[in-house]
Length: 119
Image (cartoon, rainbow, N blue to C red; front, side, top):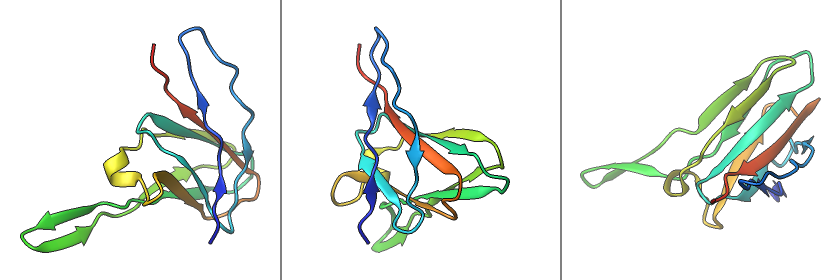
């Protein structure tokens, strides 16, 4: 599945104009390059609740057994805006250093990724 990339906006002490949120890709999911300083802002402009599932790629080892860490689900109520993050790179980054998200529905859902810059 080819995920649709988000283009993160990096903040600065002097301020930046935040990019408009874009429609999510419910069929393929979305991803962005994750530095560990990002958050995703999700806007639900529909009349139904939706769920965003942030994929984890880490494991918890007990002795010689590795247990997968459960993905993180984010509930977004109808007509609500939710922010989630930051996403630790060791836990959330895929093999291509991206953070990946799947959607229960894409109808009326937009999102944007904001990265906290350095001063």
